[in-house]
Amino acid sequence: GPDNPAPMMEYAKLSNQFVVPIVEAREVTAMVVLSLSLEVTEGNKDSVFQREPKLRDSFLSVLFDHANMGGFEGAFTEANNIAVLRNALREVAQKDMGKDVVNDVLILEIARQDY
Image (cartoon, rainbow, N blue to C red; front, top):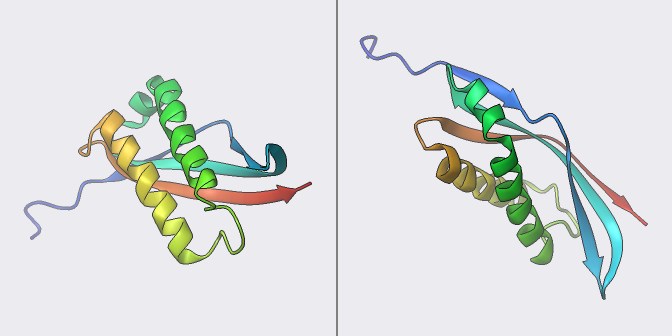
C-alpha cells in the first residue's frame, strides 16, 4: 500500500560497450556489440561504477557463454533469446552487487557485424 511505496530506481550505464567475438571453426566470423545499463535502487549508482571492473568481467563471461551456445546466431534479437541473456546478466549482477542493489540489467543496444 501507500505506506511502503516501491523503491525508486536509478540507472547506471556502463561507459564502454561489450564486444563479443563469434568464433566458428576457430575463426572470428562476426562481432556482437552491446551496451548495458544497470537498474539499481536509488543511491547505488556510484557503487556500480566502483565495482565496474568486476561486473564487466562477470558480464563478459555470460556473453561468451551465450555466444558459445549459439545465442547470437540467427534471430538472436528474438524476445526469448534476449530474455535468456538478460536473466543471466541480471543473475551475475545480483551475485556481485546484491539483489537489494541490482533490480535488472538492461540491454540498450545490440548489434551484430558479420565479416
